[in-house]
Length: 307
Image (tube, rainbow, N blue to C red):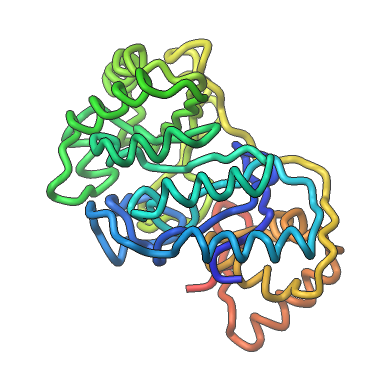
């Protein structure tokens, strides 16, 4: 399948069936911590990419073949999904087909556009990002499109909250030595009190980042930040769930689809595919020998990916 991947284990959404709406690394940001590497198409102009009809066809095929437990159908993938002009139609079509809640993973940088707010408001849960409210830190951390303005993005998030009745789970990703000091955190907290998300997800670098010098915070540092931000804040922990059973003959295709979109550990892949550990190990060893996949160590764990 070209546009659907998973279900994959998500630290925020449980078992998530992903929908990829834009070409690989088409984004309005070029974040230094991105697990997918550098942005290759930096854009703020929504365009016509994959259609609702194409997404619906793949979803129908998927559900005809598989009956796994899925917590969310998640619009996200390997770029910024709000850059797809078909977003509204896609969400409506997905919700008409399935009763599974729809989530949108977005960097939130385009919420100043009314059409995007209208489309995203159709989702059950929206998960935007806001890593900093400091202009200099934003430029360093998120490396935004030159036409973006941070104050406009913040106002867009406030406006979205006023118009949207669903759940907003806002993510902040902390990088050591960049946005983890007290002045950054208290400035963020002040703005969060105006945006009023339902949850605040505190994250740090857990997968190999785009830039080698990007460092993660440890648990004690994250705990300190949680205490500073308050009761809505949650530290995102590693996903733990039951192995699901996906009755499918295309395990290899699913493995490649997952690794194209994010680096994964062995356990990530086992949970995502719902197959035995020995089967996954054999596949990974085969693909490494054939040079179809790469692997490397990051913070003591081996990650597999496709570049």
